[in-house]
Length: 305
Image 1 (cartoon, rainbow, N blue to C red):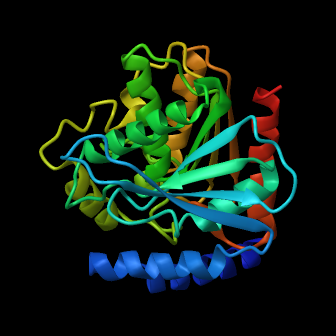
Image 2 (cartoon, one colour):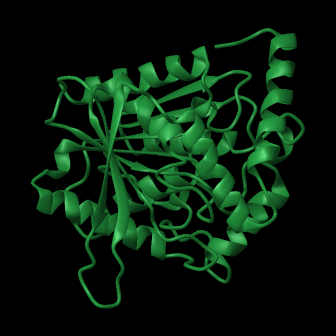
């Protein structure tokens, strides 16, 4: 899907300015800015939000803040979407993710559960994956089966959705019905050529930002560990997976390489490239973002037949 060069250039400049407002060298201010952004753009009168606390299972744990987002009308209850927010594992929240979860709830007419996993650098790997597993287990105890759940996520949240599914696979547990990934960050070794070829056109991400996020989350770790960089995982028997990526992002090859690996493992996988788009463009309140969400819904309906 392409747009005119002039319109694309204007969009890139606008997104770069918007991202500059949200991004901040002070990580706490960055987190607060993102929450403000989510509250501003994630509000939808047709989508209701129900906040909950997922209780701790031991004295060492704390409750996990989470929220359900669902349409304010009769809708499907059999399947749910478990959503992992992005933010480089250092920022982001379920409030920030409402820019996406509200659209997902609207496009699919399914309930969407997002949650606030512990963030780096205060809580580096494997804290996020541990928290995601706790939320998965909560859904199991809540009465859902693995096949009733679609995993979804953007950027680092796409990484986390993959990481959780790979962890479930390692443990021999039942896997979700499918995955929906928007601009997933799959390779923390940054081996893809797009880190260089897209560096001049990416209005959202740059090498310095990624280096900081990698240091916060996985300093001293083997970056080829599949639960850190899911690209290095074993995908035999993996659930159906749908990937969306913008043509102007340095993480472009993270999506391409994952798709190729899934196909090689005989996994039912689909990839859509949105030319001229940027990292997690689906957050933005414009036509292409809603079209992308409709494609997410089409894939979900397809695997839920």
